[in-house]
Amino acid sequence: MKPRAPRNRTLTLTEDERIRLSRKLLRVPQEWTADAMADRVIQADLFDVLDQLPEQFADLLILDPPYNLDKQFADRKFGRRSHDEYLQYLESWFPRLLKVLRPHASVYLCGDWQCSAADFQVMAKYLKVRNRITWQREKGRGAQNNWKNCCEDIWFATVGNKYYFDVDAVKQKRRVIAPYRENGRPKDWQETSEGNYRLTCPSNFWDDISVPYWSMPENTDHPTQKPEKLLAKLILASSRPGDLVFDPFLGSGTTAVVAKKLGRHFTGIEINQEYCRWALKRLERAETDTTIQGYRDGVFWERNTLKKPPRK
Ligand SMILES: C[S@@+](CC[C@H](N)C(=O)[O-])C[C@H]1O[C@@H](n2cnc3c(N)ncnc32)[C@H](O)[C@@H]1O
Image (tube, rainbow, N blue to C red; front, side, top):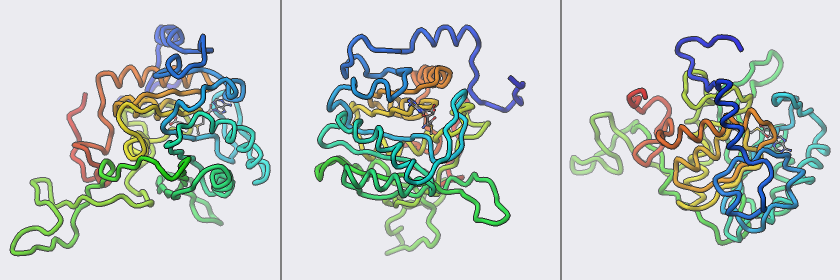
């Protein structure tokens, strides 16, 4: 591994940590019960274990599968395919996974424009689609003969019409551009020493979250790591404290880490052992550090408005 720059905070593991964390990994649970799987990272191929998963154990399902792109995940490559073939890939596991959902559960499925149509098709076939969130993730490779690809979609669906959604938990703190006063008092906004802000209901366009980068403590070398702030919004809106959040494509562990920081239970499945170890190390850190960049005092802050907390 190349030496890191001094301010680079990307997670690294020593050989001793690798050995220690490997022992913490669950490979095949002794019994496939919700209790045995709660708060565990399971190293497995989802396709091998799908039919053994218990019924109705998850309140929230977060799905971040490989997108329809050529992408190397450590020693495994996911190959770009036609729309129909990607749809077939989704159909090979998505319907079989739904038995894990409780009747009031919510599901989020991530993708980019190249798989979004297939994602919608499969979500609409089996669940009640409620919304499509567009996340402007900023980073993307510029192209000479096309628009730069810098957005992703997150489809939101529920099992039934009764579901949990806590809009107050995901309010956004925005700078007030035209501070309107009534009788000299701020109308619907707050005057603070840090500036003038309004608490707003979040829309389905998210432009306040950047991808993790090397100077952020949450960063790992995973090629498609999601930001903790993004997962925090999904988990806070669609689960209660104590609920169980299930992520069967766990990657570097973001869903599990954020669930733990927010007082939810989690179960994660990931095929790659090193990614599982990164997840476990992040989970250990979350025992003492529950901060989530961009989320403080129960609100989400617009990009670049939150003063940095002291460095730990
Ligand atoms: C898009 S990434 C998820 C990234 C994750 N959300 C994060 O924040 O790090 C998809 C992950 O699914 C894993 N994966 C792909 N196929 C799998 C399978 N059949 N069973 C379990 N994990 C799989 C890949 O190794 C990869 O880490």
